[in-house]
Image (cartoon, rainbow, N blue to C red; front, side, top):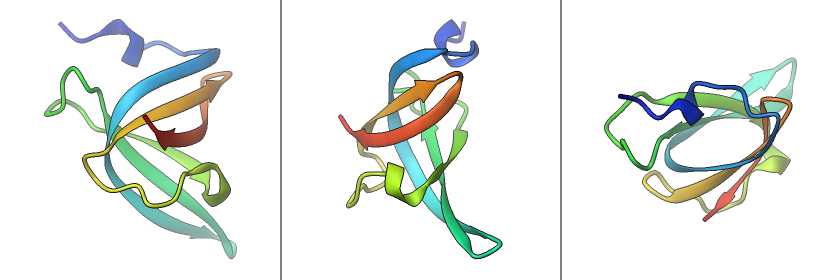
Length: 82
């Protein structure tokens, strides 16, 4: 059974995850990043994605790195190494 914390909305807090990839996205000239991640307890499980501003993502992250996702009102506000 899947861990419920990845299926419920987190109002404020943080979660551990495994970085799968980062994809830059340009929307009207503004660069955002799609951060693809998975649950560290199920690394081969479902991959989720969060779109965040490039300033909110730590530099030099590589696929496979353990990360921490900070949330506010169910939205990822920053991505940093664990």
